[in-house]
Length: 402
Image (cartoon, rainbow, N blue to C red):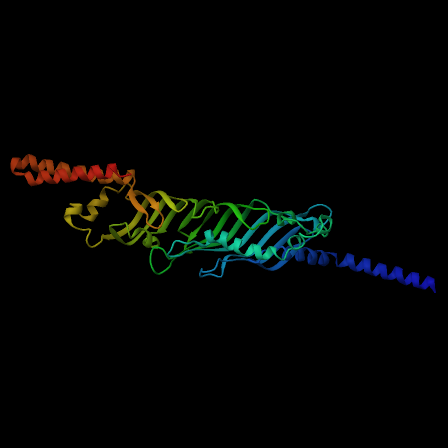
């Protein structure tokens, strides 16, 4: 009898061991997924977590980060697929997972600015702070702080930071991404610009609990508004710790549709552009809400007219086509540069050195014409001399403006 019972026990143990071996991957996946989901912040959503044990790979499907309240889109970030490699820290998964070779495929970022200047990526820090304390109330380490140290340390997750459980790399690859800029500041109606087919790399620094972004930088390349001919290369770095936006941006652009940016230049431009493309380098640096911008633009295929009220001869003493002649290169492109300074809610526009030289050349030509008239008309040309003085004042104004 005992022999049969012993044999039965051995058979049961063998069946259990065989079942554990056969379903070991499913068991590990369940346990690992449970740890990951239990430690995710509430503003992060993941649909599926898949483990490829043979290749030591993990994929996350339909990854989402909530937008701060008050913005139009539900999510700040959506990623179709996140793939990476993993390694087990220590003797097993409970001791933590180390992540490397992270790639984001199909990342969709919604950047939005309100009329009052608030930007969702800047507001995200305060949003995270507002919900993190509520989450911490339910964590074992917080709930058991009144217990003895030896008791509080029981269990693999007590008192551990999220970075102890999941160790992330400092950079990520981007493939087939999209960034949407929805801006309500220039006009009452929000203005949308998208950059599609994005590829590049993002570097990010987080705190130990992955609750705060300490620094963010990226280098990306894509196409504007789904046009393959309109290429944007964007290099940026962001400091989210400041009360107002502190960010460095450099755009190297090629063959972009000028009219897509009309809400930004229309306030400063004396021209109304009916069509045109532009290329060049644009730098927009924000220091705690103040903008410093230096830009050089090459315009091509331009069609425009002077705005009503700006076409008077007293202002230009020339027609628009003649004016553009001073900005036109030997290749036929129109080149000008400009600067933007001041608070981002009320920026000021200034001409750059190339534009100043062009305006100065125009004024010198006009002065030369006036001098020629004076020479021909003699002392009777007092009014013409006054025009020469006006042009000299114009040159001084452009030279002294920084």
